[in-house]
Length: 225
Image (cartoon, rainbow, N blue to C red):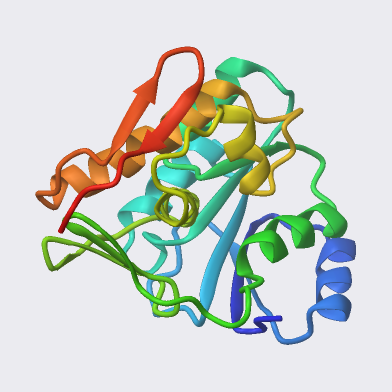
């Protein structure tokens, strides 16, 4: 288990903080105020943002975290008050990587974090498909030799596609691979993740590596280097 984790929380109750400290004593917990933390943060950074924060909306807090250097690459989960599709759409548009319906408790928080931070062993070799190279050990993607910043969900999607090229994956299969609760994640969320992945790679000059297969899902075609 990776203990080098920083957790950003908005107005966390004392009971939740005590449970986190008991179960993950190596984690650093940073309560969020009006402004995101400006200084460097240790390890992987996770944020769980309430739909309504004490002084602003959770949507605005997500935007501020994305605009701040120290938290730009954090994995942000917006904690929704209700499971409406409109709230999910707005969460993703504000920069959230994920969402869940509150209230937040320690079991669900740890499940979300552990599903991403648990690394398979041994670490795999570098994967290459055309102009795109992915190094799982370094958690790094390069397109035409240029490093590509990528959020955790998009990185894991790309890794999955590159491990299984020329194979069509349904949206449901991709949700399952990411370890998400398919009862709370709809197909349009997968389309948003894939869209972000495509934009990140094409912005670095690489051709769009994914092909949409109507009524079925997505596939990464093999490309010779």
